[in-house]
Length: 540
View 1 (spheres, rainbow, N blue to C red):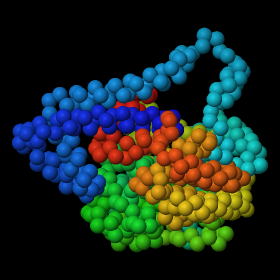
View 2: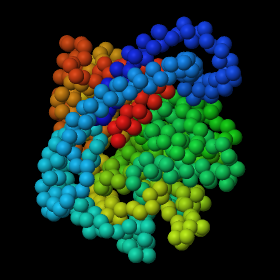
View 3: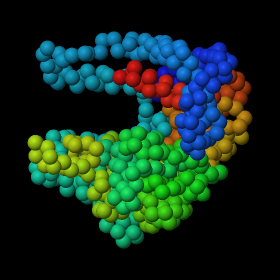
View 4: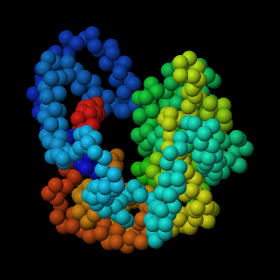
């Protein structure tokens, strides 16, 4: 949250400078446009692609800003203004970093390091029961579950599945975690030999699925200029994959139900399409995309379909067994070629554990990297990481085995009931409305009567940490076991916050509402991207 505040502050301050710059240079730019006729052809081509991906308005603004930056002195002015804000923000970081160690102690501290760590841990925000998502273990049994997975991790902390001939135990555990997850996600119904690996999290699982799909489609169809199509609700990990693996990304709007628009995806498909994407559910609004229809589309065009089940993998199978109307979402849908599912979310495993699954070995083999010409010997690795923590694998196995099907069913019952109660409570607040129809345990809500980000500011002052969303402006809470005993508290605080904003419109001192608004109104998204990169580069 602190980093988010700084970034948004950065955007807000720079927006004023950018507007001033545009006002100052716009007449000059219009005069100088003919001078840059050599650039028109490239701009025209980029604009066509931009319109397809980002819309006409954004593309025109991007093209205009490109020309503006060619005016002598403008680029240096922009860089200087950006650096001013970065330096101002980093001044706060510098004060926090005072006293941080920059080298090893001369003499080791021994067990005293544990005391220092306990002292540092006390500075963390009180997260119990008030964070959206974040910590998924909760309830009276949480202490016992924490102890169990911590002991399992500690027992195998020294192991590394890269050395599969040495640490056969964790290789065994990984295979069983993958197999048990595949059994939950339609292995039997599909009739295929579902296979996969454990990864460090949902992002790595998605990255591997995209890379494997790219290479598989190159082998199958000879595609050399790969493209993938995602709805705007899809996770940002796909943007990262597109940059890492040189894949053109086509982003399409969602439909009126905030689901992936199958017709819009169909219109974007061409001979270079390798992959389309669906989520079950999507992170912003907790809504399951029409996976069955996407599967039919993927089969019709002979492309891959990845389903992001990072949030839903350890909820939806059990919610269906409990009688909830869950639409098709897994390998039982023909056309689904890969799935990502996080064990460290609702699987209640230690952080850093996810699973990537493939319909068959023919696709999965493209995930691996094999090196034959290294002087260090023959090398093959299944995931992005070479060495991996066997302790985390053991912790995930312990979590799944200790809970079993009955444990997951009971957890799902509790969090689904809590999310439904939150939905009903929000519906009882006239100024708010639910965004779409949530299928799972994420509840997004907005308002057409007051500033929802001001509501978020008041909720933050009460200790709640919600997720702020855009397009539309809204908030969401990802319900976990932590929230089950505090649902009434949440709804009471939310109702009071809405009342406060309604009676006293206008952002509170130090709040994020004006910053979110400024970031949302900033037209040049390329500039926003540059600002984010500059800020991150200065923060590390």
